[in-house]
Every structure is written in C-alpha cells, then in structure tokens.
Length: 261
Image 1 (cartoon, rainbow, N blue to C red):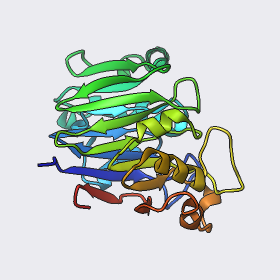
Image 2: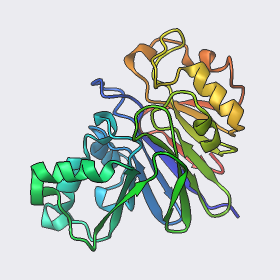
Image 3: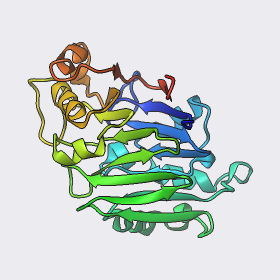
Image 4: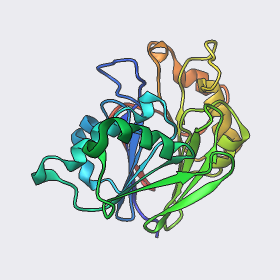
C-alpha cells in the first residue's frame, strides 16, 4: 500500500513582492517526516498558515543559493533558537549542493552565535553539483541531480516507501538532467518563470516545462515560480502545446495529496 504524501505549495512566486504569491517553496509530508524545499522571504509565515511550525521541519533542502530560495535561512536558524518556549527539540538537516558549507560559514561569520545551533540538533549535508547524489530522509530516499541555472543548482527527487515519487526542478533551463530527475514521477513540481515568447536563460517557459514533463513521462505536472509577467497570460494553454497530462497551476497554500489527490 502506498504511503500517503501531502505536498503543500507554500510559495508559488518569486522575489518580486506580491500579496498573492510568496517566494517559491513547498512542504512535503510523508513517512513521518516533514521536508521543506527552499526558504525565500515569507516562507516561515506560509508554514504557519499551513499549520506547521519551523520546529517540525526534519530536512531543509536548498535548490540553489539565490536569495529568493535561501534568503530566510538566517531568520529560520535564529528563530530556531529563540524564545525558550518554542525552541527546537528535534534534530534537522540543512542540505544543498557543493558550496553550501562556504555559504553557511559566511553567514556565521556575520551572525555568529545567533545562528549557530547545538551539534545534536543541526547537521549540514553537501550534495554533488556535478553528478547525481542522494541522502536518506528517514525511510525516504532523496536523490539530487545538477540542473542548468547556477553552479550550485540541483533538483530533487523524493522516493517514498510504497512507490510514490515527487520531483522538484528548482530553478533550471531545459536539460537532460531535469528530464531524468522527473522520470515517471507521480508529481513533478516544476518552475515556470516567464511566458512563452519571453524566454530567459536559466529558466523555463510553460511549453518548455511541459516538454520536460512529457519527455520524463511524469504522471502529474504542477507549475510554480511565476514572475509577474505570467499574470494575465494563459499559462495553461501555452503548456498544453507540449503537455497533455494532468496539469495544475500552483497557488500559495494549495495542498496536493498523493496517491488520491
């Protein structure tokens, strides 16, 4: 029997301030674990709105180090220590591509003990940014692959006991690594930054995201990471040029349940 998986879209937007869309992030809950993917500004508030506190996060995975995907990390670490009433009691891991340790050391050089947590509560794991890598999340396997955006950009694939698989593109251009990441995924959470005709190197348009999902044989596609240029544009029709399967346009606090939802 497949393990139930809940995916909550915490943010479907970008760093551009928006009352509708927070920065791109989502929460995956399965097999007794809570995995948070990316943590740009506004993510912690969205977590609370979703009924989850930061102290419940077991694994925080960064797709890359741009501010819209990592900008609230300092606040997350600082809030984890204070106040005493809500202080974290269970360990968690921060993971990302090679370069994360240097990034974290730079933050601690600025903020010092304010963001340094006890070793029994915090660990940091670097994943390879040049080839596939993996780490365990309880009973789940989290696999990563390099994607085409920055040197430290990786996408993720979570394999849940019972067979459910969720893939996340992070920020990327169309590439073979993205297709392999989403191969036969039950849910493919894929960035879609700008409409067709406004292509930006290192990001996907709706038809490109659809092409990646189709080539991968994904079972369901959800588009996210919408810049303001996407508002008022028929993103679904553009995606349908290349993708005919189940399609969802992300909204903040949307919940997807697998295998039933």
